[in-house]
Image (cartoon, rainbow over all chains, first blue to last red; front, side):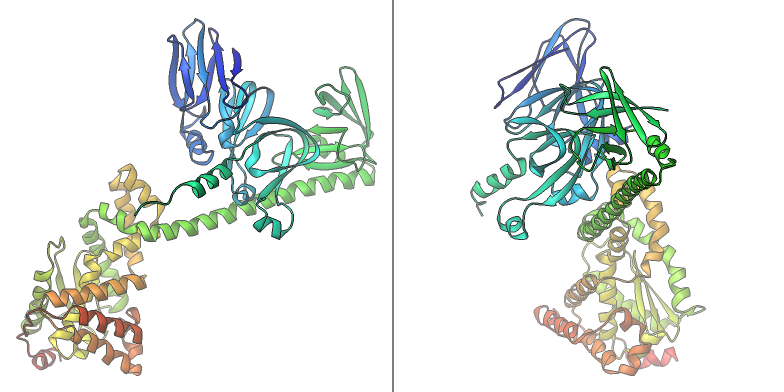
Length: 225
Length: 369
């Protein structure tokens, strides 16, 4: 499998070249184009029981169904892109585990296991999704961001606004904290932040989806009565 | 024993390298990688639980928690360290285990809190949506629950009471009931009234249309209009399917789920099972208000002045001593506000074409004695 990411960083699109036995699993609705010999099969998002997929759909913010692209013994191509403008990054997991914020997942090689992970109280208060997608195994993973994406190595501790987290390594623990004083929390526009501790990588995005929502809401004309 | 681990250090190109750990003499940890080895003296080291679930162990050579650091996923290393002969090392291992347990506890507490919060939200949502769900439930179920609930309702309120067979009493009540039920347009329910001999001052309607009146309350009533008021109120509980709404909002998700999935037979058995027990819980304030209002509208349509109903309420609440024995008023608490509201609604819906009842209430009362 060869993956070439074009139109970085603003409007990235992943062009996946599939070899004979390659399969890629992609979030429903992300396919832009494909060659005619590439088959698309719609399957439950996670391997394993229906419940696991339901869990991913309800709690992970992902679709219940994912599309699996494969070729029948020949070479083929499929192009994938997320909804929001932004970048795509290709990561290779080597029997390791990463946690991905729901909008940050674009696709993964079939060998990668997809599950959801409950965030507990942390997720509840952070205003983000209560669940992360847990990707583990060996293979290629495509992460997508709103805005640019930066892979940051953490050693000790590091602070990221909760709306800017794309993904992070399993070796990192995080705590949700209020940023600054109560005054700056309430009126300073800085919301909650995640303090990562340990060692490993954090992928952060340069724009924030909830803030896009807020901006849109404020900008839209009022409903006509 | 050897443990697989990761060594984080700036000296490696990736910032990390895979290592094999081995513990010597309970306090010396050696991490070997392809191009050398690193020694950690556990007496000076810092041990911290870490990783997403706090199910990993970080080991730092001193109090500086940056790098180098060792990350190990296999926690049996921690057990091996806890067995060290060195007291300081042993305590460090215990501390790391303690942090791990505490964080696990926090997580469980979090889950419980979230469940409590959401079930709170759910119950609010369900009270609101109960009406919609109830529309999907066949009317037959109301009747079934009424049937099932009848013996237990009688047994709890007036055990051993006998049916009144007196023709004058039954015909008089039948006349009131007919006047009311004719004014109900398109009702799916059939109303039938049972009069039971008992000092209990109460009357109630079971879902599906079965109405029970005890002679105790008949003796307190002074006119057919007063009884019509009580009946109109009870009939509206049936028409508005308050019992079913109550059941659905209390039983919540399981019912909703089965209604959506379409397996009504299954949901039915659950409702019937729990229904009769839930009936004893009584109705909510909003339901009582609704039954009041709709009851008065029904009286108005039937040409019966509703001041009989209001009068009956007032009469009963004025006599405080009697209030205690009046079980009907206990389940239908009367406040000044409620009486005022009743009067207001009555003003809005005066009776159309008032028609008197033929019953002489004094004669009826004499038949009860």
